[in-house]
Length: 199
Image (cartoon, rainbow, N blue to C red; front, side, top):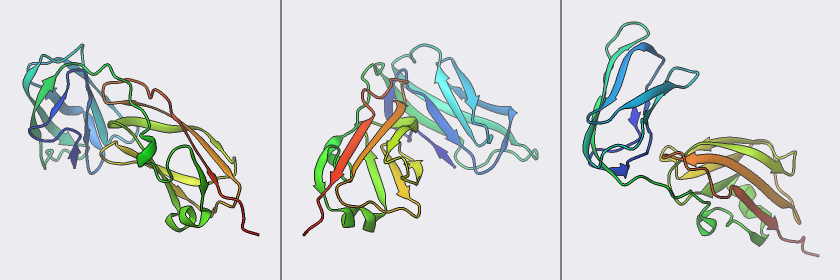
């Protein structure tokens, strides 16, 4: 259903590529390869997502990723099974939280809790696409959310579950994760404080 690199895109020579399937596949009969580059494939626990990781840096230039094989019931893999892309220099730069693009902004003070509650979510935006992003810690501890990394890896959305934020509350969240090249988040710290209650 999805390949993390688009046709004609340029990616870092040390970037990983994910392939997502509509249902569980037989990883033993699925091949994911990149022309002109060696790599290894790992699978998620559900058997629906495979990650191709280059062995060292991919040579600069044009490459083609190809997916072939069958699902667990023996049916051949369908949909888009190949993509052409260009590898560039290896990415050694750590990703960061893009403070101004977050909702609310990272480090903001005097945030109206009504604005956050009406959206019922917090959106943390990154400077580049990330993967394997998880919440390491959160305060207030009773904040209940369902968390999801956006499909393009550029943002992490925390949706409130039967929880609302009040006045004079400091929200502190620590995320961990990496960019597609495996560079860890330089700082996963995100926070904002809500405004005082009007007298």
